[in-house]
Image (tube, rainbow, N blue to C red):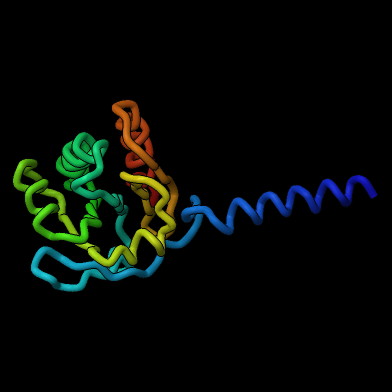
Length: 165
């Protein structure tokens, strides 16, 4: 009987972790729609077939001030090799995002979700949070927060995903 109790306990812990957690590696990308700078709808599922980095950020997020230019540098380096980066802003007021962007020249596409529906679908728990997604549309790596060390992890993960068919 004791072994059965242990199995139930372990399954219960696994369920508890998965019920409230952000999408985990091997989860499909939620099919959400955000807005381009001109208000055009952009559906994340349209990026299936590409290696994709989705980053959630906001102007009030202190680590985003460092992560945003770092992710743009990754985009500039890896976009010619096939990486797409979508920086999804979550500011309720567009002028806050625009002021942030004016101070940080960038090439990566910036999208907007002022209602905050995409981070709910992804289960974002902190800012910034980014997801590396493979060509099949599966989340393979998740990063919450930002530190200088994470660039090494991003590079390894991006190279791995780009090398896959």
